[in-house]
Image 1 (tube, helix red, strand yellow):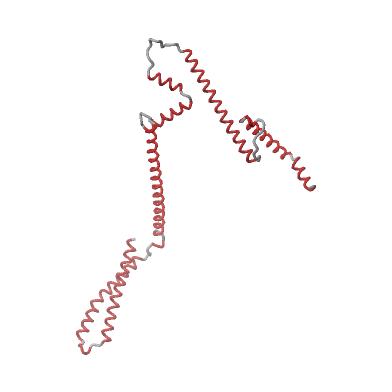
Image 2 (spheres, helix red, strand yellow):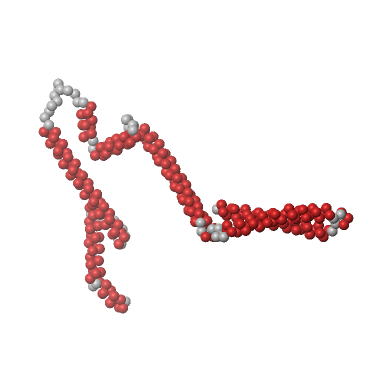
Length: 271
């Protein structure tokens, strides 16, 4: 173990380590003294417990909170003593104005006397009861009645919270739908959905072609009729009839295509 001596010596004689060790020792001494003051059985020896940095930190925080509470209690006791001295001096200075033949104490005097005679906890409880009765709009603050009011109020609060949660969910749904609609509108307003610049010219060309084909239909129909009248039944050529029928069907199909194109262009113009 001789190889550890230099490190241990450096650790022992390090000024920073020595300061930390001294500060820790002072803190433990302070904590031990505070613990010993809390119980007569701990004045001679404290109960065993684990002594580490976490325990020391927790005990120091507890000591600080306890001392702050003690200081607050001392201040309140001092204020109470001062107020009691003032009341005693006032009572001694006030002349006795009631005798055996005097007037009886009024209800207000009795209530004031009871209120001034209440301890601090009683006065606090009375103030709380008065505040609750005022909020509940009741003239007789019966504990049972106030309890029922509190239960109804709790149910109302729960219902309001549920309603608020539903409203929030509906608002989020509306927000999502609004964002989706705005995105769709932005997409429709983009260049991909804009009609071509020569749409009007294309529309005129299609209409012109439709008029031309429509003008040819009666002539073709008359030619087919005349051809059918001039040809006797026994000498009808099947090939001619098939050819004319194919031409007629082709013209009808062409007219249908042109009509569909016109409808599509009309829809684009409407957009």
